[in-house]
Length: 329
Image (tube, rainbow, N blue to C red; front, side, top):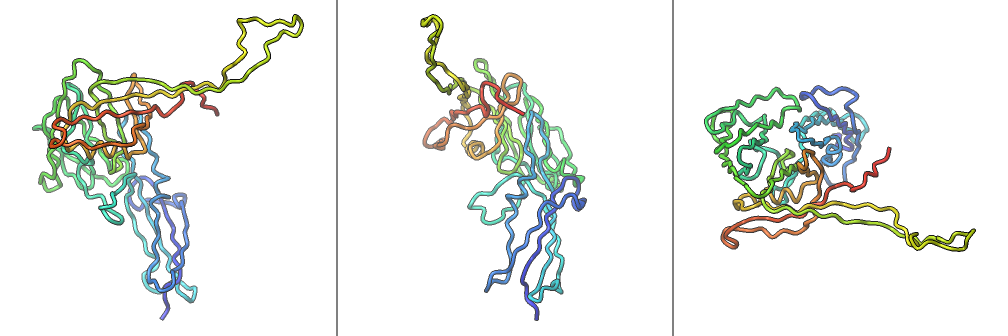
């Protein structure tokens, strides 16, 4: 009997509806042979698929998912197409998310709302966004108003961002059968002294999530430069002016930083803070612009009600660009 020798794997990555790929969507063709004494062949494609999820954000909330269809051609030890089950086609929806080690290998998304905490903090009289997974969520009840979630199969609406009206109190996320899967409390914060800043990041579900920092904010910047010593003597008069700089700076630039404080929050927000630290894509709404930032704080001690009574976090961020524009074509 013929045995499995090699798998030729074609990987199609595309937007739109499931199965709507064309030849132009073929991104990779991989080949892998079986290892002696094993009876299967495993392909790890997560990282190469991720290259085709374009994560951009400009205070808009757009679904960032892609379909991935794999077609596996099975070849036996006589170098002919395997006689049973070939080709094998699978289609999956890909998110720019991740699982934790404790979730074990290849965790699948089964969530309804796409945030880890059960609390959302918003400035008073300010609307917010709740990301939900359209394939599992049937409706979202915000106080007494119901928003029905429909899924037409297109990648551009697989993650839907439900608007949370200003001064909302409670959100119930329900499945298609009307059963409540999660209740979220919305805390409307009145902050008369400081300016709240909205930080948006890609969380572990691959969705944009907002986190407001309500308390003290400080800004700073760090300058980098180089110097050289120049000859300032006038060769015709053999003199120099004391108003001329002998040491001259060049390659001057700077990076700006901002330190934000959450204000007092509930303990279940620890998961949100953790995901913020682990995110590769973070933005701040600053002077009516959406600007990329990077956490400078690299360590965090989680606070609990038992140990700390009141919980708040102060985090240092660095703006992810140089102060002087040196972007070149």
